[in-house]
Amino acid sequence: ETSSRLFWVHGVAGCGKSLLAASVPKVLGVQLMGSFFCKRDQDERRSPVRLIWTIAFYLADPQSPCHDALLTALQKPDAFVNQDITSQFETFIEEPLNAVEYSKAISCPVIFVIDALDESEPQGSGGRTALLTVLGEIASELPNNFHILVTSRPEKDINSIFDHNKTIRHLKMGDISS
Image 1: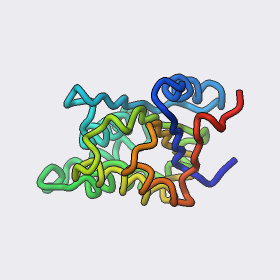
Image 2: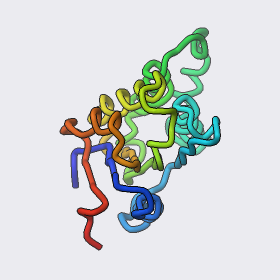
Image 3: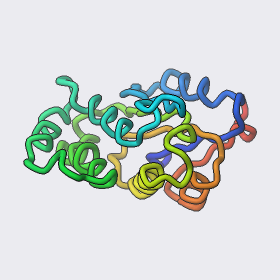
């Protein structure tokens, strides 16, 4: 049990972060809500906006308690106009989750996996910095049964935002025992 909603698994390339991320739901007995695998050589797989829309896609599932709240958010006249990443995250993820009191609507813990975050937009790009900032800020504001697992290499910009945030649970691959 932990109050953390965001877990950051980091380590060097090839140390097994993706394998760990793939096995966490089964090992911990939590429901995998969805995942997004970042890939630096594919525009659609490195875009922070696509990542947010992927989470929203899973929340929009007709079986999801967030379905109606998300549809309401999408019907707002300015829903798609000039929204920055922070606003998109708030509008399409945080607000629908809170509107339905997700922790009461879904009794079991769920997890969304963001794999290889270091392969999202290049370090220092506005979109990546905004995404890292949003993830760091919302870590304690998500419903208590909604978790995000992020894997990445320990790149400078990710470290600077995640490393000193007490609401993010840090797991360095070399420190994880089998």
